[in-house]
Length: 356
Ligand SMILES: [Zn+2]
Image 1 (cartoon, rainbow, N blue to C red):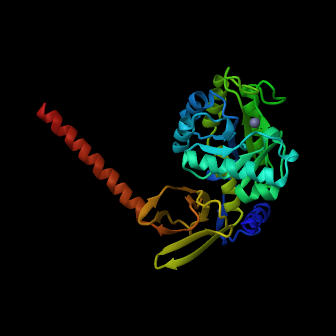
Image 2 (cartoon, rainbow, N blue to C red):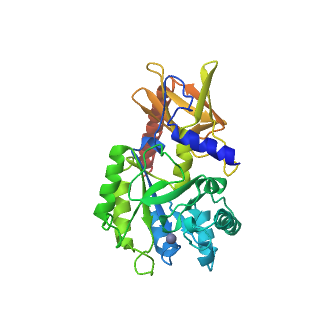
Image 3 (cartoon, rainbow, N blue to C red):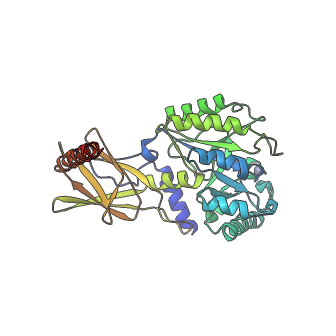
């Protein structure tokens, strides 16, 4: 297991070296060719996170990562229900210790047991963690149980971080040097977009819930509205989603084969993990032959796609095969469909008027 993880780490830092992408393709740095990835990472399970922060995120269709100290959780029902709704429940250890002051055996217990408790209580995989007090332990132990981990370091990450077990984040709220107002939050996201980075907002207390360095929920709302209005500049993903995206993108393998008039596209990753399945959708772009339109199908169903500047853009899930169907006749069929529809509507309106 350790070897696999080391392999993944090596791949993650290799920045496309292990990716096998044929001519004519481009793999998006971030989902939807967004300029930056944003993650809202909530620590310590403070009382207002579930009732206030979650609905604020969901108002804009976003999901957050909630890092729990398992010994501090009295009731799992709220966490289970937000997990069922797509939020990530990640580990913040069992007792919030300084990992660097612990033996390797003690660190293993903190990391392994918290993962097990979370998985048992929410019924989903727990594959990322954040260090208490931002103090790192031994990376190779973390790698036995998690695909990535968060530190502080007040910065954002590059698209291919050097070390997936030391992902940067920046503290938000009253105790923060940099991120106290919605304006600060927005500026930081814009900076990350300029650098194609991954911004992780480190959040604790919400309103007056007793959590460390609180932020006002109304400020979070103002900021999220800004992010939402700026789409598609930003991609908001959970810590696990963005981690998987990086590992998949940097080890993506695309191959194609001609099937008569259609092109079969197979997508896979070379990265392997016993901790998770690499099934996070990755956005790709493929150049189209001159003047041709196309649609993409998967298992006989049409996949959402966009044609832009002679290319088709769509999301793929590693381990799957897609069919690119060139369709010069599609526009003609579509036009006929619209014209016939309009005629029918006019006829029915005229009939109604005659009837009246
Ligand atoms: Zn903490």
